[in-house]
Image 1 (cartoon, rainbow, N blue to C red):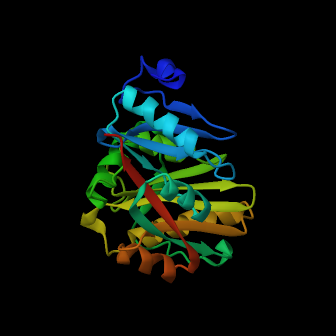
Image 2 (cartoon, helix red, strand yellow):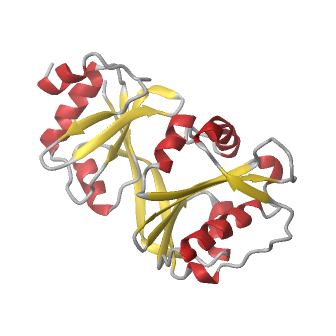
Length: 254
């Protein structure tokens, strides 16, 4: 095993703490992919500095040594996409990138019947249940992944949604992040039982209003190319498509 693999030899997929892989001027964080413990979820922490082919090869040896059978990246832009493709990774998912230019213009129907509250870390298992109901095909989030979403930006707002006031069951949630004047709608999920009733619109409006209070000037969101319902929602809420696509890449470690 390489030195990198030696340092990771006592770790196994499923450990609470993420692995950190260091390259020539870049770092990647690795956790097991939600509900797929033999798939490494590799997130490049600074996409301005990309891993070299030697970095990726060394990381793959290390990940294989601790029990992973394949590796899947987070969503990456064009520069990182070229890096992954040259290293033999293939596209697992393509995402539409959208932008909102003025969150102050977001409308909100306060009488739509939905209520929201602060979503705490203790709510992450319930949020994961909503996520699993809303998403399929291996793209749903577990509680650990939801916690990662919370901490992906310097500041965040996490809100849970209830279709009926006073009920205990969570019907939806949204996590919104901000970094200076840049905002991100990082994750939004609505339980299928309440989809089509305005729950998603309520959560998007709540997120945009929070960002507007902090004078955020630009908000980004992405959604898979085949998610027509989410795409229609974001367009109706004032987002517009950007020409760039994001991609998730995958490679077998066999």
